[in-house]
Image 1 (spheres, rainbow, N blue to C red):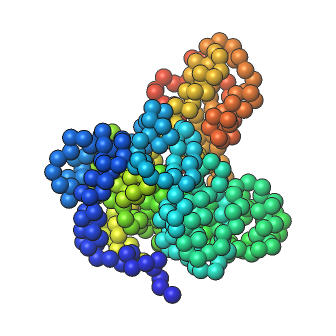
Image 2: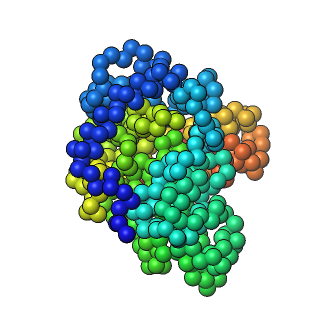
Image 3: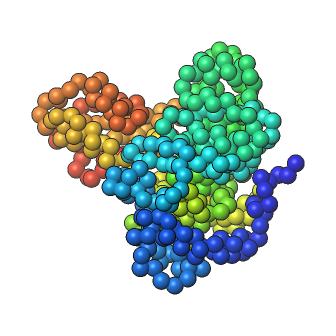
Length: 408
């Protein structure tokens, strides 16, 4: 059996680059002619697009724009081609709507699973959510593309998860690293040995000590970097060697707040052009920070590498695998009479994310903290601790979401 998912992973880098750039001009023409959004955005475009330099002259579409675009132009903001088919429609916090068509490995996740050691015939316990967010389906499709059988377990229900693991003995886990840690800890309390030998984790950072803890438990863990808009962007094949870029994408690292590419090694925002005719994305700015690495992976895959997730270009922050947007916090503030300011603080406690909302009243608090927490869960789709603070005590520094977690 090959050590690679397919032959694309071993292409000569110059051949890969030429193949992508050869497609670019025709693909942009398709997007302009079939997508109302790109038809308007790129109406004045002239000349062939056959180089990265030409691509870099095009405007960037930012993920943060999708909320407003979708409010103005319908569920997908006019980015999807007219006459195209959408088989599933998801809604992530923001809210931001994302489409899916259910073709084989539509999210292109198979190679991430393969690099993590998943092989045909194995059982996979998928512990990412299938509810409204596409995360569960993204991982589900990638595991099946490797010939695996998926147990759609979703998150939570720890005792039931352990029963499933004991009875079905799946070889693979996919989901967040923090939930794998929860399962491992609870299994140890019950004197149960988990059946997992390998795992693909996403949605959160994987600190070195946590990776080592999993390794000591007999679980080889690799990471995948994917978004609900694009699918797989990059994946880990060797620990601490960066993330290999996914095939069939043009990835740029640009200076935050602009569309100008930065030099290799410099930290900037990840911008992706995805040749997906169901949902074309041209210079789509993810809001994530990373940096290009030099050279190729020691595993033999020839595509470029990025250093992995290095933070957010804006204040949008990922907590427990879900994005929290400043606009959501403003909506919460507006829902609570007498709340003048709000600040979200994200911390990590025993490898788990913790979200605390610091709420500043104009005078006396108007709602109990528990009721504000209930409203927050409904708006953010996440549990949070709520604390009323003294009037005037929150810093006037423009920060709405304060990420206090240690760097990965």
